[in-house]
Image 1 (spheres, rainbow, N blue to C red):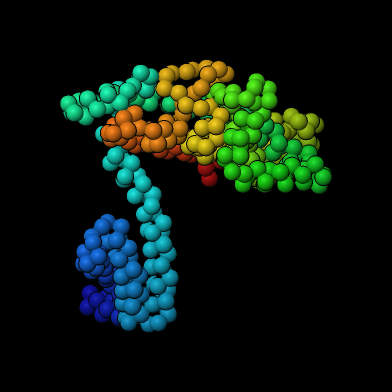
Image 2 (tube, rainbow, N blue to C red):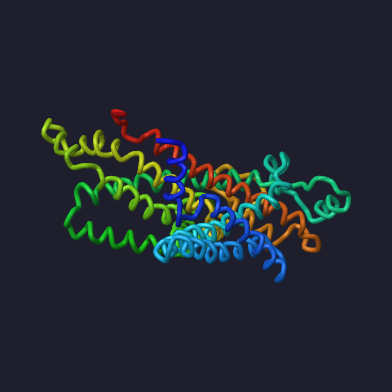
Length: 368
């Protein structure tokens, strides 16, 4: 076939079709017009993106419809709406990350990460602002408190949640107790966090007297929130384990408890570990239950069983609500933004760990 024939065939094939560069041309035009429209109402990044998205959603389907017909135009409209919805859904996340990074990075110093607020006064903040020196006071005690409280909440929640899931899947099918547990787990899933905090505070108040606050009380409150998530995630992972694996183990004469321990749980451990890590990510940022259970502290307390203990969410709350210097709240706000950045970093690290654990413990395949 000659080159001329190939060119003619390609031209006939492409006739009535939008060229590949047209999408980018429409997007560029939408960005330019979106910037112009955003400038008319006061330019902002969010407004620019929203105007550009609307213009692209309108312009691209119209372009495709004119060239390729109504059917292709409708298909392009639906595709553009999906992409636009994704971008709009992503905007709040990007906005939060951008804002926290912009305001939190300046306060993320070595002093902030290695010291507490013990002995800090408003006079020190005022002098730091007046002289342009580094702001004293940090969040080491809050970071330590958050880690310790979350670790103890995990230690309490994971065995209870995993054993409950094992009972529901392996032993309790069709039983009234199993249905009751499922119902209460569903109720606990939607319980407000402050209610969990009040429950833990009331429980320890009955045992040790009114007003008792400690890190372990906060851990109990967080475990009330974690257990339903662990139960649900572990239950779903155990249910997807093929019954053939269980039957093969029973056929070899292995007892049920040993089959669960050696076959079922190792097969589902990837999803279980991911669910546990995501449950930790959910509760590490809870504020209300820790305020009423662990209290506030300005010094370092490494004992969860005695004394008030600070956490990162409570630290952010106190720095914003009651700044060290009421007449000059700037330093306290900077500490709050830096603590918020640390909290986001911890949550991101936990999610990355969940993915890594899921990959490490995933069942090995033959690779064929």
